[in-house]
Amino acid sequence: MDKLRVAIVLSMLVLIADRAFAVDEGEELDRILTGYKKAEAPIGEGGEPVNVRLTMSVEDFGHLQDTEMDFSLTMYFRQFWTDERLAHNASGPLILPGDLQSSVWIPDLYIEREKDAKIHQIIFQNKLMWIYSDGSITLSTRLSVRVSCPLDLRYFPMDKQSCELKFASYSYSAENLVLKLSDEDIFIPEGVFMQSFDLDFYSTRQIILESAIGDYSQAAVRFYFTRQLASYMLVVYVPSIVLIFIGWLSFFIDAMPLLPGSPWQLL
Image 1 (cartoon, rainbow, N blue to C red):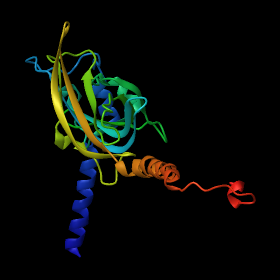
Image 2: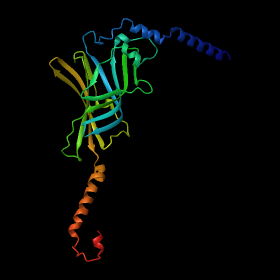
Image 3: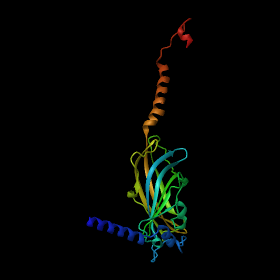
Image 4: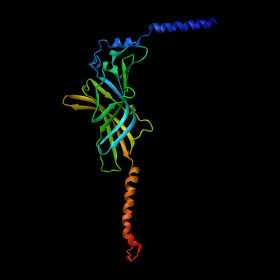
Protein backbone atom coordinates (compact mmCIF):
# COMPACT_ATOMS: atom_id res chain seq x y z
CA MET A 1 0.00 0.00 0.00
CA ASP A 2 2.85 2.36 0.84
CA LYS A 3 4.37 1.86 -2.63
CA LEU A 4 0.98 2.52 -4.24
CA ARG A 5 0.54 5.74 -2.25
CA VAL A 6 4.04 6.89 -3.19
CA ALA A 7 3.31 6.19 -6.88
CA ILE A 8 0.03 8.13 -6.72
CA VAL A 9 1.69 11.09 -4.99
CA LEU A 10 4.51 11.16 -7.55
CA SER A 11 2.02 11.04 -10.43
CA MET A 12 0.09 13.96 -8.94
CA LEU A 13 3.29 15.95 -8.48
CA VAL A 14 4.30 15.34 -12.11
CA LEU A 15 0.85 16.40 -13.30
CA ILE A 16 0.94 19.56 -11.19
CA ALA A 17 4.44 20.39 -12.46
CA ASP A 18 3.36 19.91 -16.09
CA ARG A 19 0.42 22.24 -15.59
CA ALA A 20 2.56 24.78 -13.81
CA PHE A 21 5.14 24.92 -16.57
CA ALA A 22 2.78 24.39 -19.52
CA VAL A 23 2.67 27.16 -22.08
CA ASP A 24 -0.73 28.38 -23.17
CA GLU A 25 -0.84 27.98 -26.96
CA GLY A 26 -2.99 31.07 -27.46
CA GLU A 27 -0.65 33.24 -25.42
CA GLU A 28 2.38 31.76 -27.19
CA LEU A 29 0.84 32.51 -30.58
CA ASP A 30 0.17 36.09 -29.55
CA ARG A 31 3.76 36.40 -28.33
CA ILE A 32 5.43 35.23 -31.53
CA LEU A 33 3.12 37.37 -33.69
CA THR A 34 3.82 40.52 -31.68
CA GLY A 35 6.08 42.66 -33.83
CA TYR A 36 6.08 40.02 -36.57
CA LYS A 37 6.37 41.48 -40.09
CA LYS A 38 4.50 39.22 -42.46
CA ALA A 39 5.54 41.26 -45.50
CA GLU A 40 9.17 40.21 -45.00
CA ALA A 41 10.28 36.79 -46.21
CA PRO A 42 12.24 34.70 -43.64
CA ILE A 43 15.54 35.11 -45.49
CA GLY A 44 18.58 33.88 -43.54
CA GLU A 45 21.06 36.23 -41.90
CA GLY A 46 23.62 35.42 -44.57
CA GLY A 47 21.11 36.16 -47.33
CA GLU A 48 20.27 32.51 -47.96
CA PRO A 49 17.01 32.07 -49.89
CA VAL A 50 13.93 30.49 -48.35
CA ASN A 51 13.77 26.83 -49.35
CA VAL A 52 10.17 25.76 -49.95
CA ARG A 53 9.62 22.04 -50.39
CA LEU A 54 6.45 20.98 -52.21
CA THR A 55 4.51 17.72 -52.03
CA MET A 56 1.37 16.56 -53.82
CA SER A 57 -1.11 13.82 -53.01
CA VAL A 58 -3.52 13.37 -55.92
CA GLU A 59 -7.06 12.72 -54.74
CA ASP A 60 -8.70 12.51 -58.15
CA PHE A 61 -7.94 13.11 -61.83
CA GLY A 62 -10.66 14.96 -63.71
CA HIS A 63 -10.89 15.02 -67.49
CA LEU A 64 -8.30 15.51 -70.19
CA GLN A 65 -10.40 17.39 -72.75
CA ASP A 66 -9.47 17.27 -76.42
CA THR A 67 -11.62 20.25 -77.40
CA GLU A 68 -10.52 22.58 -74.61
CA MET A 69 -6.95 21.24 -74.48
CA ASP A 70 -6.76 21.16 -70.69
CA PHE A 71 -6.80 18.70 -67.82
CA SER A 72 -7.92 18.88 -64.21
CA LEU A 73 -7.18 17.23 -60.89
CA THR A 74 -7.93 17.52 -57.17
CA MET A 75 -5.00 17.24 -54.78
CA TYR A 76 -3.65 17.84 -51.31
CA PHE A 77 -0.93 20.41 -51.91
CA ARG A 78 1.59 20.90 -49.11
CA GLN A 79 4.37 23.43 -48.62
CA PHE A 80 7.21 23.17 -46.10
CA TRP A 81 9.56 25.98 -45.08
CA THR A 82 11.21 27.44 -41.96
CA ASP A 83 10.61 30.83 -40.35
CA GLU A 84 12.78 31.12 -37.25
CA ARG A 85 10.83 34.20 -36.16
CA LEU A 86 7.93 31.85 -35.34
CA ALA A 87 9.90 29.50 -33.05
CA HIS A 88 7.95 28.96 -29.82
CA ASN A 89 7.96 27.09 -26.51
CA ALA A 90 4.63 25.27 -26.77
CA SER A 91 4.66 21.54 -26.12
CA GLY A 92 3.23 20.76 -29.57
CA PRO A 93 2.77 22.45 -32.93
CA LEU A 94 0.60 25.55 -33.12
CA ILE A 95 -2.30 24.91 -35.49
CA LEU A 96 -3.63 27.84 -37.50
CA PRO A 97 -6.90 27.54 -39.44
CA GLY A 98 -7.45 29.50 -42.62
CA ASP A 99 -8.63 32.75 -41.01
CA LEU A 100 -5.45 33.13 -38.92
CA GLN A 101 -2.94 32.29 -41.65
CA SER A 102 -3.10 35.82 -43.03
CA SER A 103 -0.97 36.90 -40.05
CA VAL A 104 2.01 34.83 -41.24
CA TRP A 105 4.27 35.11 -44.27
CA ILE A 106 3.29 32.53 -46.91
CA PRO A 107 5.03 31.81 -50.24
CA ASP A 108 3.18 33.63 -53.03
CA LEU A 109 2.98 30.68 -55.42
CA TYR A 110 0.94 30.44 -58.58
CA ILE A 111 0.33 27.70 -61.16
CA GLU A 112 1.51 28.50 -64.65
CA ARG A 113 -1.13 28.26 -67.44
CA GLU A 114 -3.85 27.76 -64.86
CA LYS A 115 -7.37 28.28 -66.24
CA ASP A 116 -9.33 27.75 -63.06
CA ALA A 117 -8.56 26.81 -59.46
CA LYS A 118 -10.36 26.73 -56.14
CA ILE A 119 -9.70 25.88 -52.50
CA HIS A 120 -12.47 23.63 -51.22
CA GLN A 121 -14.68 25.24 -48.58
CA ILE A 122 -16.96 22.36 -47.47
CA ILE A 123 -17.49 21.81 -44.55
CA PHE A 124 -14.93 24.50 -43.71
CA GLN A 125 -12.00 25.94 -45.62
CA ASN A 126 -9.70 23.01 -46.47
CA LYS A 127 -6.51 24.80 -45.52
CA LEU A 128 -4.44 24.27 -42.40
CA MET A 129 -1.06 25.37 -41.08
CA TRP A 130 1.20 23.78 -38.46
CA ILE A 131 3.97 25.83 -36.78
CA TYR A 132 6.52 23.68 -34.94
CA SER A 133 8.72 24.73 -32.03
CA ASP A 134 11.82 25.28 -34.20
CA GLY A 135 9.93 27.56 -36.60
CA SER A 136 9.39 24.97 -39.33
CA ILE A 137 6.00 25.34 -41.02
CA THR A 138 3.69 22.99 -42.91
CA LEU A 139 0.86 24.45 -44.99
CA SER A 140 -1.66 21.96 -46.37
CA THR A 141 -4.33 22.93 -48.92
CA ARG A 142 -6.95 20.82 -50.69
CA LEU A 143 -7.57 22.36 -54.09
CA SER A 144 -8.82 21.59 -57.57
CA VAL A 145 -7.08 23.03 -60.62
CA ARG A 146 -7.68 23.09 -64.36
CA VAL A 147 -4.55 23.71 -66.41
CA SER A 148 -3.92 24.23 -70.10
CA CYS A 149 -2.42 21.15 -71.78
CA PRO A 150 -1.51 21.33 -75.50
CA LEU A 151 -2.30 17.98 -77.12
CA ASP A 152 -0.75 16.25 -80.12
CA LEU A 153 -3.68 14.48 -81.84
CA ARG A 154 -1.89 13.26 -84.97
CA TYR A 155 -2.11 9.64 -83.82
CA PHE A 156 -5.61 9.83 -82.32
CA PRO A 157 -7.03 7.57 -80.92
CA MET A 158 -3.76 5.67 -80.39
CA ASP A 159 -2.03 8.73 -79.00
CA LYS A 160 0.04 9.45 -75.91
CA GLN A 161 -0.23 12.79 -74.12
CA SER A 162 1.62 14.59 -71.33
CA CYS A 163 0.42 17.44 -69.13
CA GLU A 164 2.47 19.54 -66.74
CA LEU A 165 1.78 21.34 -63.47
CA LYS A 166 4.33 24.09 -62.94
CA PHE A 167 4.63 26.13 -59.73
CA ALA A 168 6.50 29.40 -59.30
CA SER A 169 6.74 32.40 -57.01
CA TYR A 170 5.02 35.47 -58.39
CA SER A 171 7.31 38.10 -56.85
CA TYR A 172 10.36 36.47 -55.21
CA SER A 173 13.36 35.75 -57.41
CA ALA A 174 15.60 32.72 -57.01
CA GLU A 175 17.89 34.81 -54.80
CA ASN A 176 15.14 34.94 -52.16
CA LEU A 177 13.03 31.82 -52.71
CA VAL A 178 13.85 28.36 -54.12
CA LEU A 179 11.25 25.68 -54.81
CA LYS A 180 12.11 22.02 -54.35
CA LEU A 181 10.17 19.04 -55.74
CA SER A 182 11.20 15.43 -56.39
CA ASP A 183 9.52 12.25 -57.61
CA GLU A 184 9.28 11.04 -54.00
CA ASP A 185 7.13 14.08 -53.19
CA ILE A 186 4.34 12.94 -55.54
CA PHE A 187 1.83 10.43 -54.20
CA ILE A 188 -0.94 8.85 -56.29
CA PRO A 189 -3.02 6.26 -54.37
CA GLU A 190 -4.18 3.06 -56.01
CA GLY A 191 -7.57 3.37 -57.63
CA VAL A 192 -7.05 6.95 -58.82
CA PHE A 193 -7.54 7.08 -62.59
CA MET A 194 -8.54 9.40 -65.42
CA GLN A 195 -11.47 8.67 -67.68
CA SER A 196 -10.41 7.46 -71.17
CA PHE A 197 -6.70 7.61 -70.25
CA ASP A 198 -4.18 5.46 -68.41
CA LEU A 199 -1.45 7.11 -66.35
CA ASP A 200 1.90 5.64 -67.46
CA PHE A 201 4.28 7.52 -65.17
CA TYR A 202 5.23 11.01 -63.97
CA SER A 203 8.44 12.99 -63.57
CA THR A 204 9.50 16.14 -61.74
CA ARG A 205 12.01 18.84 -62.47
CA GLN A 206 13.34 22.07 -60.97
CA ILE A 207 13.87 25.04 -63.27
CA ILE A 208 15.49 28.46 -63.08
CA LEU A 209 13.56 30.77 -65.38
CA GLU A 210 15.68 33.61 -66.72
CA SER A 211 13.83 36.82 -67.45
CA ALA A 212 14.52 40.51 -67.96
CA ILE A 213 13.64 41.30 -64.33
CA GLY A 214 15.50 38.40 -62.70
CA ASP A 215 15.81 34.65 -62.37
CA TYR A 216 12.91 32.75 -60.83
CA SER A 217 12.75 29.28 -59.31
CA GLN A 218 10.12 26.91 -60.66
CA ALA A 219 9.12 23.34 -59.82
CA ALA A 220 7.09 21.13 -62.15
CA VAL A 221 5.55 17.68 -62.35
CA ARG A 222 4.60 16.16 -65.71
CA PHE A 223 2.05 13.34 -66.06
CA TYR A 224 2.25 10.97 -69.04
CA PHE A 225 -1.00 9.40 -70.32
CA THR A 226 -1.98 6.80 -72.93
CA ARG A 227 -5.47 6.93 -74.42
CA GLN A 228 -7.65 3.88 -73.77
CA LEU A 229 -8.38 2.33 -77.17
CA ALA A 230 -11.07 -0.12 -76.01
CA SER A 231 -13.80 2.51 -75.63
CA TYR A 232 -13.15 3.87 -79.14
CA MET A 233 -13.20 0.35 -80.58
CA LEU A 234 -16.70 -0.24 -79.16
CA VAL A 235 -18.13 3.21 -79.84
CA VAL A 236 -16.48 4.17 -83.16
CA TYR A 237 -14.67 1.34 -84.93
CA VAL A 238 -17.07 -1.59 -84.45
CA PRO A 239 -20.21 0.36 -85.55
CA SER A 240 -18.33 1.80 -88.54
CA ILE A 241 -17.11 -1.64 -89.64
CA VAL A 242 -20.63 -3.08 -89.32
CA LEU A 243 -22.15 -0.23 -91.38
CA ILE A 244 -19.53 -0.62 -94.11
CA PHE A 245 -20.06 -4.40 -94.20
CA ILE A 246 -23.83 -3.96 -94.55
CA GLY A 247 -23.32 -1.41 -97.32
CA TRP A 248 -21.07 -3.76 -99.29
CA LEU A 249 -23.57 -6.63 -99.01
CA SER A 250 -25.68 -5.02 -101.74
CA PHE A 251 -22.92 -5.70 -104.30
CA PHE A 252 -23.15 -9.45 -103.62
CA ILE A 253 -26.92 -9.78 -103.98
CA ASP A 254 -28.00 -11.11 -107.43
CA ALA A 255 -30.40 -8.92 -109.38
CA MET A 256 -33.88 -10.49 -109.51
CA PRO A 257 -36.72 -9.59 -111.86
CA LEU A 258 -39.64 -8.03 -110.05
CA LEU A 259 -42.60 -10.18 -111.18
CA PRO A 260 -46.13 -9.00 -110.54
CA GLY A 261 -47.11 -9.93 -107.01
CA SER A 262 -43.52 -10.63 -105.96
CA PRO A 263 -42.82 -9.96 -102.29
CA TRP A 264 -39.71 -8.02 -103.35
CA GLN A 265 -42.01 -5.26 -104.59
CA LEU A 266 -42.92 -4.54 -101.03
CA LEU A 267 -39.30 -3.78 -100.10
